[in-house]
Length: 405
Ligand code: FAD
Image 1 (spheres, rainbow, N blue to C red):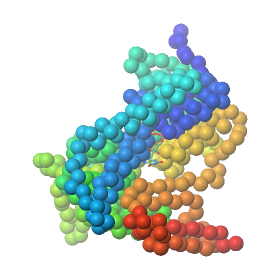
Image 2: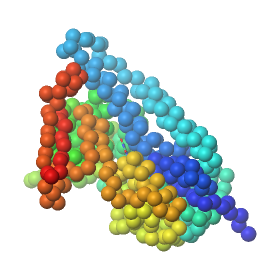
Image 3: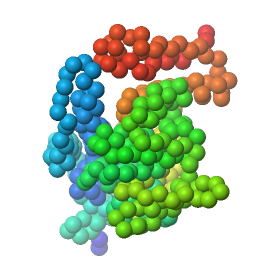
Image 4: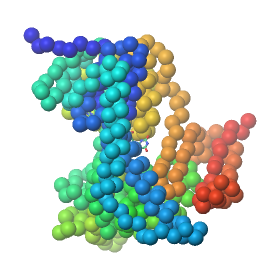
């Protein structure tokens, strides 16, 4: 007979959702197994997302500050960037954080298993490890397998010159001409990095504005202004149709009238969104239901249609941010333990780490108008803020949306 390990809770995926759930559940006395296929725990956030992008943004911040100090009478030589050293520094941060997660898990008695999880049924997870297959019989499971970059077939040439955020964060070289397809926060943040490193960046966005759908348009204005100076061009309302390899370049076809336009780039970064990692996981062997885009359907307690299995983080849809995944992790564990918090009326703050940065939280002016909610607006321009002036960054504003009553 097949020998199975037994546990109260198995968690598939050790990103910010999965490891938060594991720590929280273990602290509350559950026997936990945490399964991760990657060589390092931490998920996309730590390995190919939040942390490496913020490390690179910090480095570019130094470049920009040094350049901007001339008018204060502080002069530096033009900077020399050693990409290998920059990579090593970034890598050391990731290594430190991931070994911290491993150590913390060990300290809490969590069984951390490196391998790929696959649901055999609603109570059994098969894990393909380097040493063969393990079977885990669980009372409850949390799916926290995250998401991956979307890359349409017409862009996917199998050529490393067409990158997603995964490749762009490796920053192997600084391309002379870089096209970024997609003006969401990932495209804008990585555009900020490459432009500061010396790339001539063209950004193409199909919608009428960059960074749409989050913060109010007036908060985005300072970012657009500064990106227009840093980038060669920002094109909105523009559709990229296809790409082809052309020697050492990428030939990109843009939709245009009366004739489509072709341009050559050294590299292209495709940042048009992320899709859930919900296939190849055996979910068809459970009662889990996915929506049309492949996100696992959940309720406000993180329960799926399978009574034994919960889902959290990017794979469960909604706003794809690390702290949202971590919050859902605690809701899921509370649900397993019989109540506690839910994911109702949760306000999720967001930050875009461009230069300048934007941060927002709660109801926006746009949403208030759409929902006919009476509000008052208070704005304070930073050009009148002593602190902003002493930091030499008077661009931007603080905006409050206030209940009219
Ligand atoms: P993930 O972090 O994706 O982790 C899922 C894990 O599951 C992965 O480690 C994966 O290897 C593992 N896995 C998948 N399938 C299996 C399987 N079958 N078996 C075992 N393991 C499996 N968010 C922020 O809040 N702030 C930021 O500044 C920010 N910056 C970002 C920058 C970039 C470039 C990107 C791409 C994302 C950024 N995000 C940011 C988003 C953030 O990374 C995600 O929202 C977050 O990582 C989601 O966490 P998660 O736990 O749901 O999944």
